[in-house]
Length: 113
Length: 114
Image (tube, rainbow over all chains, first blue to last red; front, side, top):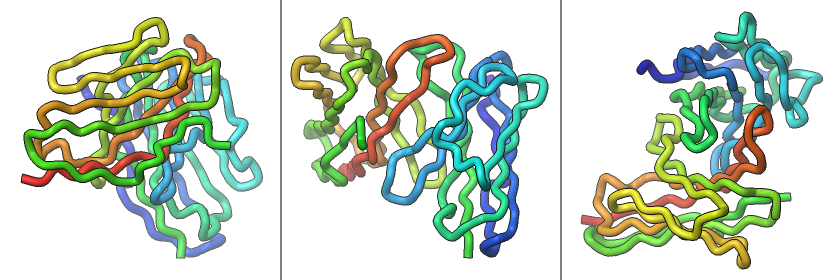
């Protein structure tokens, strides 16, 4: 079974620029999550999709972050404009059944300078 | 408000000894708990889980204990191996289906010395 694919692995941008991350979940996983992990902290949920509908985006900074999941498969997360405090690893995860937890991708490390 | 707390940022143990990683939670609605392991430059990987209807779950060298009255869980690794050196995250969820989402602690860096 292929894992959760994310790209790019690394990205360096200047503040006020825009950036986009892509995620392809495990085939058949209906639920997709985007998490932000700042250095020294645990992953924090940004947005949760069930198929192509948003279930929870309460912690997504909607003035600058947006996400979509077209056709209930791939997803993109966008930041526009980026701030220094957005420097973090952005993790995508998908799940099928609760007792198996999530499967995470390798993440995208974003550095905003 | 941190609902899942891992108060030890790091832990160092000798190879062959027991590693005990601790986690506390504050949300009484949490009913499912998981441990994840993370190596540098990789995403977290699922290690072991426990439902609130149990107080212990074992998988090989890994055992998770849950004390609901104390809102505390722990992960025991016996015997510890150098390959176990990683960051360990405790996570919890309340509810299933479309409400299934995990809240993570800050993690504990485990170093197993040869």
